[in-house]
Image 1 (spheres, rainbow, N blue to C red):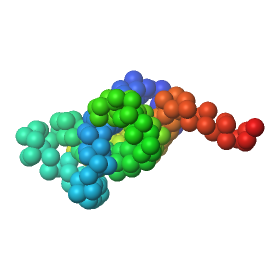
Image 2: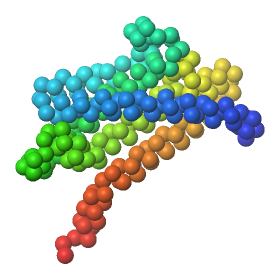
Image 3: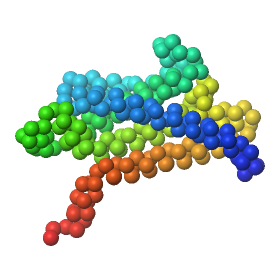
Length: 222
């Protein structure tokens, strides 16, 4: 029974959950760090946008299992090395976020950036202090999609022996033990919902002006 199996295997389940979460979130951080400069470039250059955004779309269409099999020969790693999964998910994260970053930065009103320039903000400071904060709402929306996607895709790593909650799928299938499979699915759904909720809250905390504007709009004209 499920309620008997879970307590007896709680230590292993917690260990797999921690591994799964690390394998999902590290690529999100790395992917965001790479996508921000690439997205900035795409928002500033039509040529770069016409190259980078379609390239990101193509990268995301690569089957995850095929990418995991090919990466060891490219990186020079062992097939069971978790680095392969981290790199693969980082590629998918960058592919998803390039468009989000480019669209977010392009949505910043021109008069705002002009005002910052007139106040003496040079390009790097203007980007960090004005453009990027204003782009947060759109950027967080893309980040939520990428994070939930990664939490799901980590389970594919179990097919090549990389840890995570996907191990419960493969073991449960091999043993015809549905309790193990259901537990893995349930925990992945919970992790995805928690990560999505935390990012939603973080986005609201980082953009207090958006809440003020919404409240003012709700009250209507004085």
